Length: 205
Image (cartoon, rainbow, N blue to C red; front, side, top):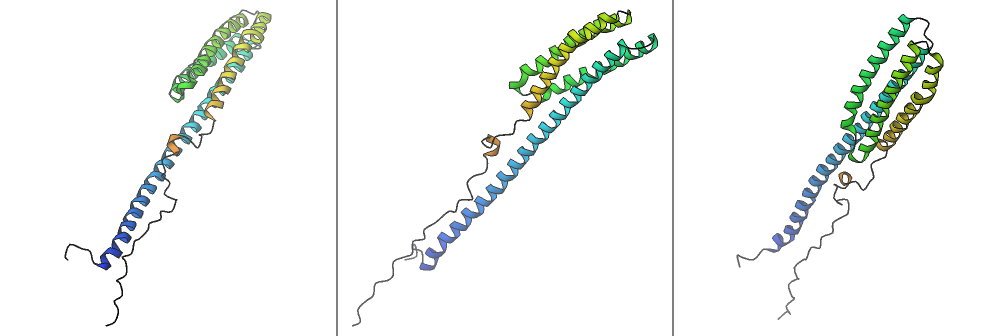
């Protein structure tokens, strides 16, 4: 009958279907792997940039601290004025760096970021008292402020930076949804081809 498949067609059909499934599986696997690689690269790049920004913030705070200490031992008012200008310029740059860094902060690390901003603000206020005492030739008071509030808020900000750095340095777990996009195409797919029953033998007449 014309509606029935021939023996050759019945043998070829499973092979064609197997080839089609294998082709589609390979296409999906390549697409998924490229997607995973792209996501992983984006995550790594973001963490590297975030870590670099934190180090810039750390160095800037250290520079401001050293400039404030230099103000205490400055030999003349001209040097003091120059140091104050440098402190203000460095603070303005650090204010901008902190504002820019907020876009790198994950939702779960928002409290750490706010703590850093608050400790930095307290650090700046302590520097004002230090510089005023130093400019007024109150050296002992300036040293007491440097060893007291300035050091305390500087250490607090440093601890906040360390905590943020540790947070962004945590490796991405392998169970992350972005890394679970590859289907298990590496598992071999076994298909059973049902061959037609052999024609029954007829006894010789």
